[in-house]
Image (spheres, rainbow, N blue to C red):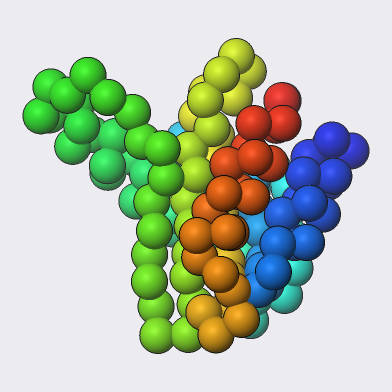
Length: 122
């Protein structure tokens, strides 16, 4: 878990980041979480696992030979980024990052999120 806590700390260093979690899409359980987004990250992790599973089902139903890179949800005051992890040992996991919309640079945050995601190994 120490490695996952380090990943959460790196994610929270992204400008405008208010919260982050590494989530198991199948169970909806946050394996690690941190920050203060103003809501319960564990509830959000479970809810967003439904989003990821629904999109994966849609990709399968459409018979697309593709995979999710990331999902952006834009709220009035926040950006919610979901980055589905790839690679050995990371199947079924995603990073959930909450950004303050008024202080975050979305393009830079996505770039840094992808960089951090590449370092995750469970």
